[in-house]
Length: 149
Image 1 (spheres, rainbow, N blue to C red):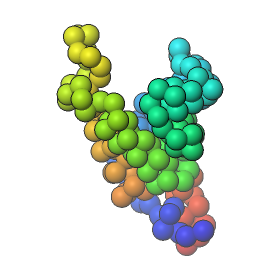
Image 2 (cartoon, helix red, strand yellow):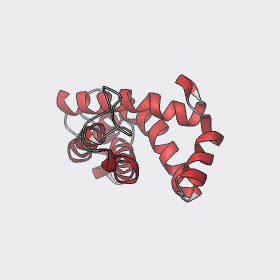
Image 3 (cartoon, rainbow, N blue to C red):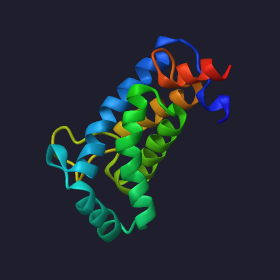
């Protein structure tokens, strides 16, 4: 494996970014994969993505995979750049497929047709930081990078 994939510093900033993004994304991934927190589970989500949204099955699967396993990877700092890319790309697609039409703001007051894209921008921003900086302190990637050095 390429050591650049795991290379990171021992900084706390990427640790905060990756754990925050992972913790925020995990419930969304668990809804889609496991049906937790009122989600539809894997088959229901696949049906919605492919039937209602017209997303090809392979991309629907990758989105579910990225949100669940990418979140776990971010939390523990394993294959962090790959996980951040998966989560960030999933948020980019979600933003343009279903949220830009609703404007910028979240639907806090319930008076919009749906949610805006501000949440997606925050997630994408965190993902970009992680892709640039790596996993940071207290990560599996950091341990692997030290072994490879």
